[in-house]
Image (cartoon, rainbow, N blue to C red; front, side, top):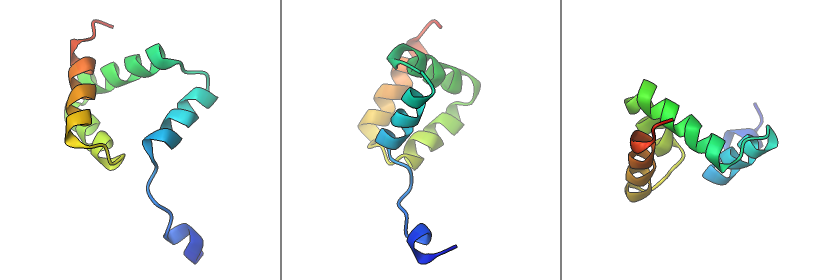
Length: 71
């Protein structure tokens, strides 16, 4: 791997959202994705959100909304 790729930052929330939009997901569908992730693997969801670099407050909000969803 060349030096340029080795220094690449991890994926940002904006990049991840852009990829979801590129495959046709809207906000509601992305919310459903988070809900399924939270329901099926809460600790993995936490780790994923941390990997994206979200601050603790935003992680708590995303996880709370995901846990409350009935979808």
